[in-house]
Length: 408
Ligand SMILES: [Zn+2]
Image (cartoon, rainbow, N blue to C red; front, side, top):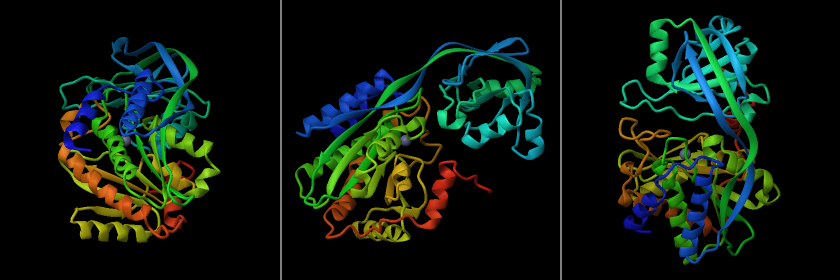
């Protein structure tokens, strides 16, 4: 895969592709056609996802309408209440949520939402973007079903500039109106098999969906091209272990594609010796990392390999917020490769994640290293990575997947 072909793929996929949308389907079919171009036959596998069509979303602060996007899957209705800015999640601050529409910082995570419900909040407001950027973009957010578990209160997302204004002015009362149709839709994984000599295989994953404002060149058409490059190499080169490539849908909505795959292929997972996941590679600036959700020995192995091949890599043991996690949660050792850009050179989940962040030659180099690693694992007499999850990683998985609350 040369730099020109890589950049052509970024051009071809320069559109928003949210999980469950027609645009995501278009991207799935495009990836399948890229495989076809390599003489390889990929399959598209559907799975169910919660969807909603927002008919009306209004947010008023002291009677003045503020631009917003309503939270999808957060129900319909109207709520009017005092506005309260939750500055911190200490018990005292939380106790003041009762009967209020609560403005929070950052993402609406699982525990944040539970705190809001337990403390009697009647609605919520999040904000994104950056006060220093020229745009007034607002990301489309959703109340994820594993966050709400059916207990829905209405919420809106607004721009950071407006959030600051609400607090500067000391707005007293807020009103949220949501009208939406919720239904079950489809998202898709694209699956390509390259059988090996052994029944066991390595799964390579990369998500191809994006968030609502993002063309997702860096996050994560880059990784999607990455595993395609690995597939191209192994279509012509031997491998003892089988290789299964999965372009995952709806990762940005909570790793839904990888979770659906693991649920639908539970029995087959016993044959999987390793997961290699790519999420954000090949950007112009930044360092290459290998996040190993596995025994510590893999960290050392990747470090030694990067030294041997002269490819600067920071390897460490942790849980990566990507499609590797549902596999690791099934006890499959996983490594996520990424090139992490300094945040003042590239950001994600906004309209700035475009082809402008990408460099074809850097993509080639990153794919080269990932292919070399895969080559060694796929041709090992026995895959050296222990097929167990150490206790420290199990603990991190429990916290990441909200089965346990991080006490820190
Ligand atoms: Zn990503």
